[in-house]
Image (cartoon, rainbow, N blue to C red; front, side):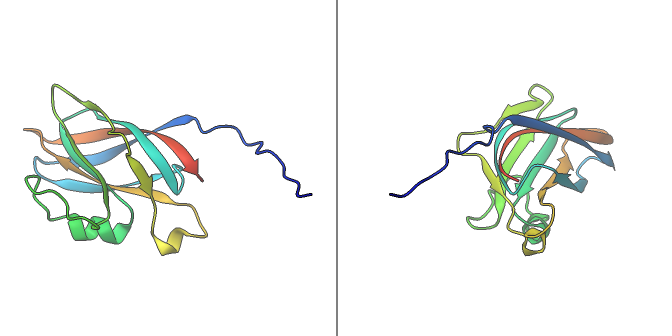
Length: 141
């Protein structure tokens, strides 16, 4: 008779991580590498302290390939863009859409710590160091 052991791991819990970009002129961008969020997870919410356009990626190469895309154009399917959103003065926190799953596909990270890759663009009228807070549920470390 086969035997099995029940899973004893605690259920995933929400986790928040905050990082700040260097000072960005209006229209400028900065890459962010968010550590400690695991290889797979679900976005719950993203917030900034200034208006910004944020894109999250499955790899560094996807981020580099997408860096020149204008805000008016949607990312191409299969481009590696996981979540693309913009905060405004009236809404600096955005609840992630259902199915907002992230993952890391960087082969260099398969045996080391994984990073969630992001690109933050200043869409405000003045220079700003933009604080980004990501709230997630980590599914795989």
